[in-house]
Image (cartoon, rainbow, N blue to C red; front, top):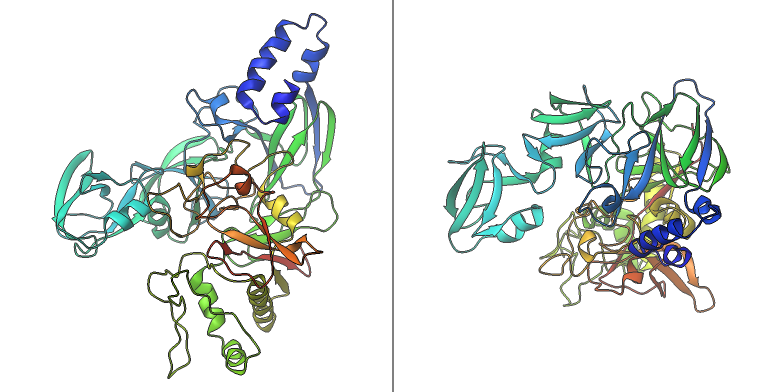
Amino acid sequence: WQEAGAAHDGVAAAAYRDKVMELDPSGGAARRIEGTANLQIACPLPDVALHLFRTREHADVVRGGERRMVHVPWRQATPAHDPGEWALRVVRPAGPIGDLDLILRVAGHPVRGSVLVAEGAGDVQALDRLVAIGGAPVIDLYDAETLGEEGAERAFAFERAGIRFDVRGTGLFALGLRVLDAAGVAERGGVAATVHQGGVVRDIVLPAGLLVRTTAAPLLCGPDSLAGSPAASIPDLPAGDWLLVAHRPGRPPIRVPLRMPPGPTSFTFAVPFPARDAAPPEFVHVPDPSGQNLAFWILDREVTCAEYLEFLNDPEVRRGLDTGERKGLVPCNTSGVPRFPRDGSTGLFSLGPRWRGDWPILGVSWNDATAYTAWRTERARRSGRRETCALPTYRQWQSAGTVMGREYCFGNQFRPRWVKSCFSRPRAEPEPPRRFPVDESPHGVYDMSGSALEWLDDWYDRDKGFRRAAGGSWAQAGPPELFRISGGYGLAPETTSEEVGFRLVLTMETEE
């Protein structure tokens, strides 16, 4: 049982656990396996609600589930809802939708597998569901984008009120149609949705102004998860992985992963609650429960081509390129086609063919990435924001990505289709971030095991001068170790690769 646990083999661990329980008449070994913890949580603020979730493998909770981690309210032996069913979590609330609410269905459709029409044309109406193109099923935006490209005339199958109908055309654009996933439709507002709100499921028309994220491990906050406010004392909790969610009205929730050993465990929650606008949108707050002032904000995705293009077109950056002070800032893809061709008359860069502004920036060196972070810091200071932008350190990367002892942000089992790897699509190529909701960390950070290898502000081998690039990428096939939070490569800082990009962390001079 111990060896299986060390090897992260859940199936073998379960089998050996049963053997230990059968062959342990004294109960000594069973107490180690069945060990419990007594949790004490104290928070100095009077208006904080504490929610507690046990982190377990989906397959151990739901028959036929996957070998990935999900979160179950601590009072629920049997979850009322599938804790691994995809949902939309709220990043920015609006109207009647709060921070802890979950959107379960949009326009009557489930979050997973729904591609919906944004605006109708001809026989197709807004919120019709696109289900197939040319006979091939459409389950996500990638299918719609690739199958729906301009080509020969074919059938586009839609569904409305459970009735399927076909429209013939040469492409989605030719049909005058734009499609969105459930998150995109929800953010437009004005659409009916099924919402989990405080333990109750109700139908609500979504307001405009929401910002949401698709999650494969939703947190169903309600009476079954509530541990106390502002303190909690819970005896006899099973030892293992837990997730504490602290919520203060008007502030974004704070998540604190806990690994509780058998025996008494005392936890004083004295983490500051940052203001909602303390960091730009799309940054996630990673707290520091140790009280050592090591909290930081991290971008929940990689920096995109559009954001890097804005950097290249800054007048000071272009001047540096013209004078030779800045070098290597215009990456090319492997076929030699410039990603950012430059107009000879205006000197401005643009996005080259075959590249999208919402793709992660790739092919930049560590030197280029740090030049971008310095530019972001300077821009923030000029606008009056007292923040420092940088690449994540290895410690920050691990803090944002997983909990101690876990190989991946979603558990210890790896499946290539759970992350943006070379096997996740029929054709290996980059695509926009956050499209693989399983690849989400306990703090709500995406694509830490796929999409792009990411430069870190740390050494891989100081003697050789190699900087660290962490995580997996869209072009990698394996082995699985490359996709681990602890995985990656050591590369010379001037190296560029079509697999390597970066994301940002922010630290504030003052945290509220």
